[in-house]
Image (cartoon, rainbow, N blue to C red; front, side, top):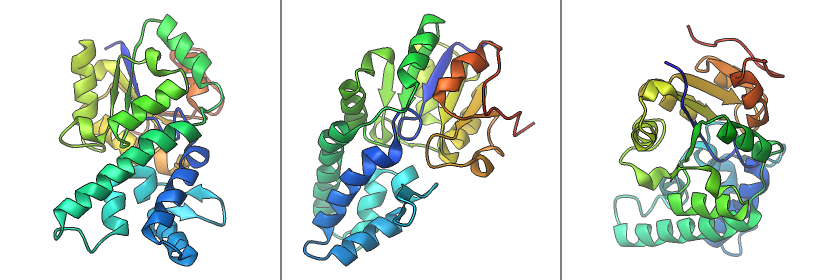
Length: 248
């Protein structure tokens, strides 16, 4: 089936993951370990931040998980015991992501022009992220990209976030096409796992985030340097950095 729609991950795909999220997560780690910089650094480390490279590790809780998972990792004493206190922290983290995530958001190079080209070509565009939906909307609005997308979904938009199929199926229903008419684009394994679970027509890995080629190629139909290369690839001209099917 011909592709009619494209669903994008947000962090590492549309926005610069490390530049956007390090200051936000460092602030929340400092709140979790007041007056204890060593413990705050430890929390960032177990969450996935590599201080040596200044980057978040692929597949880590912060890079690939949800805010709920980060809260449970950093406050294990609350999991399954004090649900009211746990929910307050989840709400605090979500609020920080809405405000600070938008304030620190940095779009990746070429994203705006790529979205303009894809919209002009008639594709329905959407976002599926394991960030919260309110945070995703705030970030895209801050970057003046929100109006490019007909649907923006977070982990809290569906019963089962990525890597489950729910967000892609919901997007396909929203734009009125079958899942195999949707291309999924993301920088992390869980994006491509969702594509496979949902029966997407194309699974596109991009190297602009936390995942590398060895992570993405086994699940991707194509691996590109970034979203900036997507219009050329879809229009048949090829793209720099592309790799053939990683999965037959």
